[in-house]
Image (cartoon, rainbow, N blue to C red):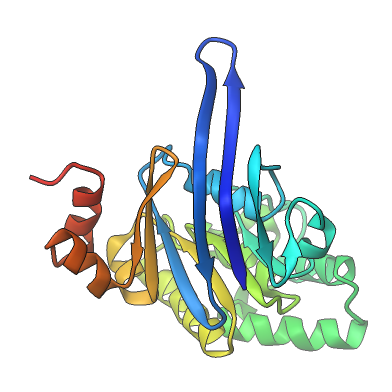
Amino acid sequence: MIQVQELSKSFHDPKRGTRLAVDHVSFEVREGEVFGLLGPNGAGKTTTLRMLGTLLKPTSGTASLNGFDIVRQPDLVRGQIGFLSGDMGLYGRLTPKETLEYFARLNGMSSERARARISQVFNLLDMTSFAGVRGDKLSTGMKQKTAIARAILHDPPVLILDEPTAGLDLPTARTIEEAVIGAKKSGKCILYSTHIMEEAEYLCDRIGVISDGKLRAIGTMEDLRRETGKQRLREIFLDLLGLAA
């Protein structure tokens, strides 16, 4: 459902010149699969996710999501995805319920469908207790749940999740992990970025490791173990970055 073909993105810095942040990256993510994209800070993973979410235009290459091209059909791509970025972008004066009602209208959902879906998402993410609390009064975990609820509200076939459990306590992170597993079981295509190695090993069917804009390896845990001779994902990751002891 996600096909990435030689995707590249360069940025021009007046002091440092042109920098290639993503360098001819290619991979695919299938229906009913969680694909982890791992990399250190500045590796190019967030830039990759933003290009796939049509927030940035690639310098070269392209990708298709559920059959729609990110360069030629960005508006159609947006209708296929739920996108969670590191910046939650919630409006502090709206409650979670009001936020979801607003985004339901943006997605063209009928009032009846919106009510049913909002109730379903609130139950899924255990949000009912704070549905009426203003955004600027919510905890970090509550805000993150609201941002995820917004991303999945319209039931898109493709989810792009950039560090969905970053900074969360264990119970909240577990709720989000369970929601991801449920989405996978329902056939969603999920592109998942995280710095938490244990989480990636638990959730992801396949993993791609990116560094300096290049994909260093792609495969299942067993594939990556065979390639590196390491067992733990943490050690596999460091080996692929050339940092193994």
